[in-house]
Image 1 (cartoon, rainbow, N blue to C red):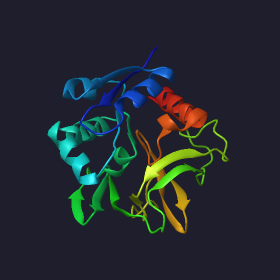
Image 2: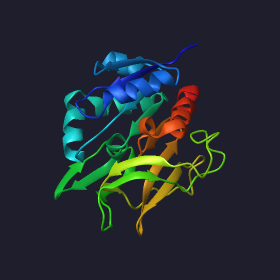
Image 3: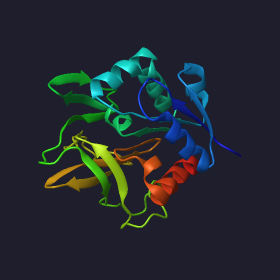
Length: 211
């Protein structure tokens, strides 16, 4: 059965390229901000480009934070991409503007400590093993990044969790940041799978098969 993915339209993100990539991966895609459609689809993909604060304002404008929370409370899959991943954390601090995020994970989005920003182009990951997100993807594969901000510290204590999140890291110059998180029904990537060639396409197929 073909899976239906709602691509959340809240005024941020390259919706067209994300839609094409999801369709190539085998999903039926509905671009929408309608709460009923976004809540009831098999999967919800949250894109994001630009500043954290602006994305959160757009997200709240369509009640996207509530949609995400309701889906996760009901065990329904959600995936965030780029700033769509960042807004899942507690807080963003960008250009001196501190903004509250969705609070699904503790942590702060802040400026990367690097001489050359944005971090733009292809980069490898500290690839996990036995991960549904990265199943069938070589640990040598590269993914496409465009960002100057990221989560540099993972603050969630996982020792007491039955199934702790899989946190995937990457490096830019001498800094290290969260590149992806796989946390039950909530997946997210700092990189753009829709721009990451065959590896990104495989990751999106993995997600669609998961949902």
